[in-house]
Image (tube, rainbow, N blue to C red; front, side, top):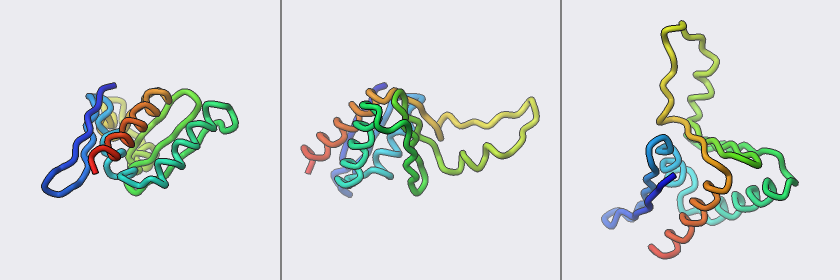
Length: 124
């Protein structure tokens, strides 16, 4: 999983670009996590609890995107995707959700998260 973090010099907003099949992670980092240190710290504690086994799984509900974590992987998905799962589709039809959902390993996510914090600290 490759990623790049940037700051728009005109507006000061942060941008996170992730490789194909992980694009929604970029939206989650920029829009849901943003520059909030409290959210970052809480998420680091959750990851640590998952790694030592004191927590089995956790769901973090965001405004547009949510995060599910367990001891092995992370799933980022659009909240509307959960609503769409209740609908029945004909055999020839399927829901396209590649830009609305992504999975990655917990360690990869943790590495990206730490890189995000480092980027934010350096770009202020």
